[in-house]
Each structure stands twice: as structure tokens, then as C-alpha cells.
Image (cartoon, rainbow, N blue to C red):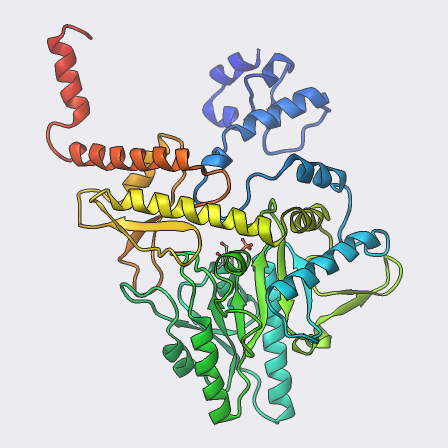
Length: 469
Ligand SMILES: Cc1ncc(COP(=O)(O)O)c(C=O)c1O
């Protein structure tokens, strides 16, 4: 019996075997975990083994750590299942998938207020990370061409950004040899300061990043103010330093919740924008988008033309093949929701975030950091030094199934540790109410734990006096 073998083998041996409660009914011998099995496994058993393993993951509905979509409508699921076998890159074979991608690019360029008559271009990506790498490359190439044409040095490009950028920006800088110029945060101020950004810019700056909804606190960076300050600098120096907006989350939120906020192509220096379709675009992972305000912002040398799939096929992506399903699902959402639907969903999320924030604010242990004019998330910290930290609270509420991350802020504000709840579809008001209750019980429990005797010791004492063992 498999179960017996697992118990009698030494632990190292057991760790190398694939064991599953249900799968073991049908297997006469365990399967190896880290090498390709010699023989075949019946489909039903293989399914059960993998299915059982997946149960060890957290519950996606209670995953309040992630911005990424965990639920779509059954019709979207069906479309994605129908397109599972389609490779997005086979543009000649699947021209309609390409057409749908192009429609999505057009829809987004207009949603981001591309100027009338602009020849905006863009592409679907695996997520915002790939989109950011592509946008960063376009900035670097444009800067290099301009400098080379002026006979100036091109060996020391830099990029100015707040130190609260997501890790993909650090990756871009390292992988593509661009010096990152991080603007430090300070307590109470967790977004880029336009004056500090402009002061950091020099002739080697390929661009400045503005984040629409930073990962740490959800706050929007002041992109209009950045545009205005940078415009003055460009006029004074004759440089042409552009802005890229990292709208991974906010590009699908701001157009619906704060349409008058100017953060997009309404600002002349905003030359490119990325967005994660799989965050507030409401599609399963992984789909992202990058849009350039005008084709002139995308140097032709970065576009590869291949003909091995038939016809001339221009590509500007880091990966060649990928599933078409996410793009199709994004288009489904655009048709399904329209402006009104996205607006209703975002307002609902905002309302739940506000409710949650108000509830958390009633717990004296906590101080809110997030604001209600940004992404629908709640970021908060402990008000005073206690015998426990936000990391203990995160662990404690995990016992109730909630996945709420605790982390420290970026450079110069690392001493501030916070908890963050991302409000996505699936977190109802009822669940928010339960979460508030569980947060309250967690801090009460931790308070009591740090007094003597601890509650469990106290209970044991009471149990003894009642004669219960
Ligand atoms: C502001 C920001 N930029 C970029 C990313 C990376 O996005 P993706 O996970 O789509 O690659 C994230 C992810 O959380 C983000 O919050």
C-alpha cells in the first residue's frame, strides 16, 4: 500500500514520492516527484494527484494580497477554454485573434485619451512587467538615437522614478543596463515629488516614471504636476525627457472613478502607458498592455519582422508564443461591461474599500495610510510600538483563511511596516465585515498573549479546576 510505504520509508525517500490520499487508491507504487516517471498513469489518477496537490494552495477568494483577477463570468471561462489551443503569435493562422488584439489596443488608446488624429500603437503582453520592459526599451532607444544624432555620448542612460516602483522596474534597469535613479520616500509621503524628480533629471535621463496606483499604498503619483514641472525643464534645457505612466492597476480604475484626473495622453509628455489586463482589467492572469501615444515613440529598430508563419508579421514582445485566451477574454470584458459596467464595478469596489477602511479605523490599534481617491485598497499600520508586529497579525488572521500581506515600505521609509488589503471583485461587504471582526480579534488575542498568563495557559488552568483533562 502506498500509504504504508510512505510511513515506513525514511523521510528523504518519502519526500521524493508523489503521494495523494485519493490517488493512492489506484496506484500500486508511488510516483517519483522530481523525475519523469518511467510508465504512464491513467488520466483519472493523474488528474486526482494534481488536483489534490492544488488544494494545498491558498483560497483565491480569500487572497487579499493580490491585485490579480480570480474570478470571471462562465461565458468568459467558456471563451478562454475554446481558445486554449490557440497561439497568439500565429497571426496568419489566427487573424481574428490579431484583429481582436488590435481592437483592444484602439479601445485602450481612446480610453487613455490619445489625441485626436494620433497614430497610437500598442501590443498585448503577458502582464505589466513585459509591457514595462518594452516601454523602457523604447525610451532608451529613442534617447540613444537623439543623442547619437547630436554626436553626444550614449553610454550612461538613466531612469528617474520613485523608490516605491514595483520590482519590474528594477529588473528593467538591471537587465537593460540603465542606471536607476530612485527618489527616496519619507514618512507620510510615499509617492514621487515632482520637484525632486525634475532635480534628478539630467541629459542622460531616458524618461521619468509616474505610477498610477503604487503597489505599496495604492496612491496615485502627481503625474500632471510632474508633466508641468518637466515641461518647464525641457523648455529651459532643450531636452525632451518624456514620462511613462505605470498604470498597472490604476489605468483601469482612474478612467471610471476619477475621469477628470489628468494622468494620461491628455498630458503632452506622457508618451506611453502600461496596464495590467489581469488586474482591474478583470481578466485572469496573464495579460497586460502597453500603448504608445504615437507610432513615432516606438523606434522601428525594436520591431522584428518574421515570415516563418506566413506573411509579414511585425512583433515587439519579449516572448514569441503565448495563449490567445486572455486577449479574447479582455475583449469579452470590453464588450460585456462597456464604460457603464466598468464604472459600476469600480464604484462598488471603492465603496467596499471605504467601508473596510472605516471599520479598520475604528480599531484603535490601527492607523490608515491609504487614501480614498486612489486604488480600491486599504493600507494600514500599527499606531504604536507593541510587543507584536503587523507580521504577527498577518500570520494570526491566516488562521481564519485570510491572506493579508504585511511588508515594509521602500527606501527611507523601511522602518514603516504595513498591512494591505486589495479590494477586488469577490470581497463582499459581508466578507469585509468578517475581516474587520477578525482583525479586531487578532489584535485582542495578541494583546492578551503578551500579558501573563497567556490565554491558553489561563484556559488550561480553568480546565483543570473543572476536572477536565
Ligand atoms: C505598479 C505596478 N507596476 C507593475 C506591476 C507588475 O505587473 P504584472 O504583475 O502585471 O507584471 C505591478 C504588480 O503588482 C504593479 O503594482
